[in-house]
Image 1 (cartoon, rainbow, N blue to C red):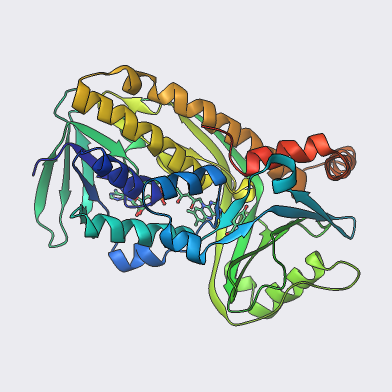
Image 2 (tube, protein in one colour):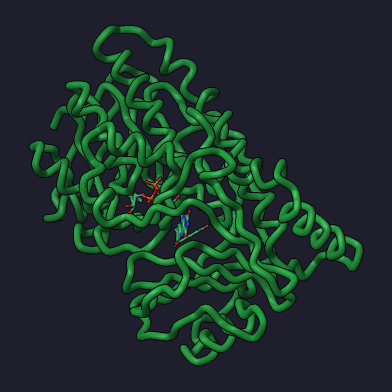
Length: 387
Ligand code: FAD
Ligand code: DHB
């Protein structure tokens, strides 16, 4: 098989890259190890930056998002038994949209299918070769277990944190782990709030989010090695009520669970994001803890840059943008890392913090909620920094 751009991974990064390249007249094939149903249903992130929604609209992917997505003009920080709103629209004139990552993925798969794009699901044994040449190759087994080879001009490693691409790029790794994790649930219960609430409580962080007028998404800080079996539904609900209540009133409405899982918290950056003709994008190159809602948005920002760089290379034989891709992407990545680290540190109870650090953390929260400057800094990061 032959294509211009071989894309490993059908997450938001790989699928959007394939769509953007198609709009520029560049051909690609997406290779995905999981099955299509699994990829369409995988529950993950939920908040789209204003920069992301602008881009999705611009490239013809905004129709269902604008119909079904929930536009939020702010978020709340909850601590000291009170709700403190950060009004994005008033502070920076922008907003965010709550629209599940799997909905973005479904829209992308549908668009690629409609446009005749090739996505090969259920592949295995993916390996990259000859990335130092201008004919890099990907070998794999197709859904029937037959060995295949895809010869490309460029390979995009969009295969997430555990995929093989990053291992093929000599890089320096910046890695930071946190002494906690998130237990997330998706519940068939109508949200009682119109916006997200990030809660700091002495028992740990909790997040109130949603997916639709019928579905609530909730998270609890738990230990990094937490066993999900220790968390029957009743315990989860009780803990959510305790952490999120203000004046004894819990915003949480209970309902049947549709999904339940534990997400590790990590900050990770691989630099550079390119070796020869292999380019990394999204989680393959970097991970943020979820508190800033940046993971999927960063993947989108990477492939926006990468699609332009690859188009310039393949259609105009101009390598300037591919040469600068890694540096340009990493500038945004590190700002998102900084913001995600700050939100995470401010809102979680760290088992390793001493009494002094705990007081500083409270002071930081109180300062933030009382300062237009501090709230503006959160608002401009949360809605997405300009490209
Ligand atoms: P991915 O979505 O990981 O896509 C990579 C794709 O590559 C996958 O489909 C994978 O199956 C495929 N792949 C892997 N290896 C191979 C291979 N060898 N061959 C072929 N294909 C391969 N972010 C938030 O902001 N909020 C959240 O609540 C949140 N929750 C998360 C929960 C979990 C469990 C995880 C893992 C991530 C979460 N994130 C969250 C982060 C966010 O979902 C990611 O940043 C986003 O998915 C990045 O998109 P991506 O396309 O780069 O990677
Ligand atoms: C969601 C996830 C996040 O990581 C976040 O910061 C906000 C919302 C969500 O899944 O809805």
